[in-house]
Image (cartoon, rainbow, N blue to C red; front, side, top):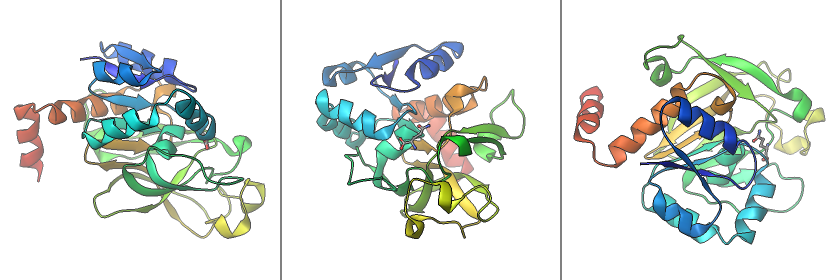
Length: 236
Ligand code: GLN
């Protein structure tokens, strides 16, 4: 079945292209009723407040929350991760509406502003286990968020070691000093909770489709593919 890609704003075309490279059709989602035609959803990177405003305008929040509640696979990349989180901090002003469901607290611009964007090699065992790629994954971090706290059901897939106040410069972030977490050495940048996946970086901006493959596999398990379920059980 086709994979939905929330197409309000941001890197939705890049996700659809990555899915195409894997022989999977990505369907642009802009209206609540379009969610009925897909069994899984990718929320792209972009700008999470803009995305939230557009989702509100198109009356998408109830349908998106229902989609998550039904246990269908949903993957948020960067702004999409923020959108999926239960709590986001680091806004310049006020709160912003979130879909929620992913039990974590996300700092919206943890690594600083646009000019602090960077790339890093991430060792992720679950991704390295997928055939046809190198042992690490090239993480593209663009004005990237980080996951500050996770709930008990959240599995950490990827983290990144930061040298204190080097990658994270409190003076150059948009946020106040007290929200800065410059003393943290390892920050979480990839999580999974049941059928929800969140990455602070942008796999859709690389030629490496292994995160997309990983997400598609989650969908197979969700749809009751018994061979995948057995494989997961054997690993436990
Ligand atoms: N920090 C951005 C936000 O708050 C997300 C950046 C991105 O998606 N590349 O929405």
